[in-house]
Length: 215
Image (cartoon, rainbow, N blue to C red; front, side, top):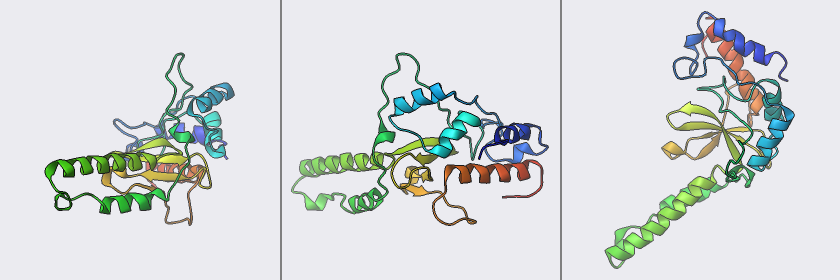
């Protein structure tokens, strides 16, 4: 699955048009990769997160690199916890529940209005309770996922790490009120696995960096 991928990525640093690849230049990844994890380092990172990571992502971390070059502004690094590090919040270990999107939409329709309350104090109390519930639902949208990449403008790529959708890549677009939605490619149907997502990006990046084609 990952044979030769690290070498292909690093070779792009010498391609004539590498700066045309979105996210590679300036504050981006520059086609650099962190060293791959050892099995012991990966086990420590998984224990800290409270999950066993999906197979394709695990093998990427072991064979290609622990972060760096990837779609958009690159992949966040995965490292074992430092000695004395505080426990992780274990958000990744909670169930991933895409059905929460419907609850978020329904909750938005129930926002309190002043006309429905006897006075300002009652309205403020109701609205504060509504806001607390909104924040909790918003946070829960990314339960069962791991933020793996930066798309810019407060958008992120997330990997589902448990349940029926484990191993698929989704988009965290909560910054614009759109929740968490599956990544899609025009050339494929259904959900996109981590390997499909990364290989698609690498093929496009190679063509772009060599001046062969646009996305």
